[in-house]
Image (cartoon, rainbow, N blue to C red; front, side, top):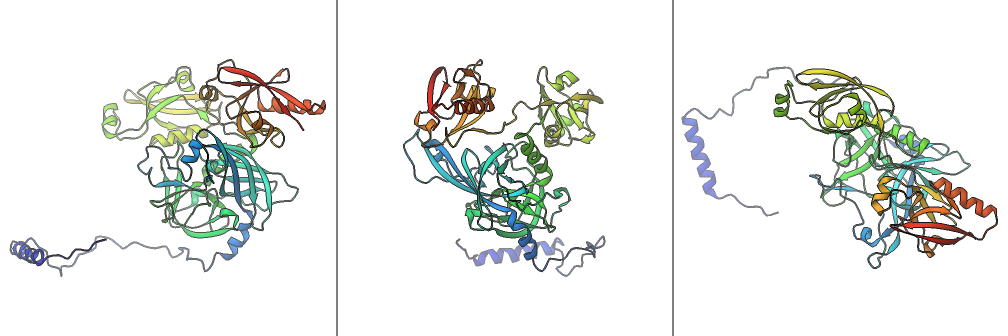
Length: 496
């Protein structure tokens, strides 16, 4: 940075101007006394002092924090853009928000090909029988997942379920040993200024800990529809993504997910998914492998003062209904375009995010009272919540060790993405392990397995069942009918 000296003329001009204004009585004396109009800020006598050390707490919880190593097959197009992803397309912070712990490519190959790459992140065990929480972006596209504990123990893990909208994922470890685990705490009770401890296990080097405070609450960084991040100043670095954020009781109040950084390193602005949001998502992923959210069926937008005045509202609050999906729960309950939703389930709706989060957390099929502002008066409605049409199904694997296929249910979104006809049924291939029987036969992500032998299949479970039957019949190969785009073909895969 260049420092410039001020020229003497600046000082002379300033003195002259000061003298002029002083003569006019416009410059207050520097010795004037300012009289306070109220008492000074009072600090509670019971304010918690800074602890002497976090050593005992860290030693207690660190065994439950793990490193997550991922191998994934990626196309050259993805490799060209590998590394930390920007947070939120179109976000004002797009150039600065960075996710970390991404799969990093090692080498390259011609465009259009696939290559196995490795990535690393962190996670933590939430149940003694082997459930691990991490970020969804850490295991994005994973073919193989390995979990390494602080003592060096390494175990294979499978992805139980992912929820990209909150960037959460749950893994499952199969082991006879009872694993060390930690529990979620009350993130709603965390206040700005409270101590927090971020622990990660980057690159399998062993648990590392950093400390800081809660800097802010309720941050919306435009990464998804349910943003409600805790902002912290505890340093978080590459490889710590998915690691836990502890309070001083040793309970997890957040999952470290993102940083604000102009240079890729920590500058003291980090973001964690609060436990109040994560706990329910994790429970659903553990139980069902997917997240089911409530659905209203409305397009909504925020309010400003001019809109509020035009609608006869005293202040700009609520969510303005721009459109109602025909046949949706909102439509059937009588919600109209131009309504302002001001209450949901007994809670006030101040802004769009309030409605988005509360509607998503409502159980499908539940009856929810909704208050709307219409034609200058409040109207009470009752809506039977639907189920979100874009639930993410759990990834399922069909004989990965032998066939080398990762499968998932075939959804309408997948049909559209891969150019499949509406009448195509089966299980969609989400990944193919290199050097596997499936890879050698040319199978790739987006292919649909429509038949195993002469038996039509409609789900990954049915594929697994039919492949198992072929093995039980001592067959050396299994015949698969593959649909790719508008074409179909049969492929024989070895079962040896």
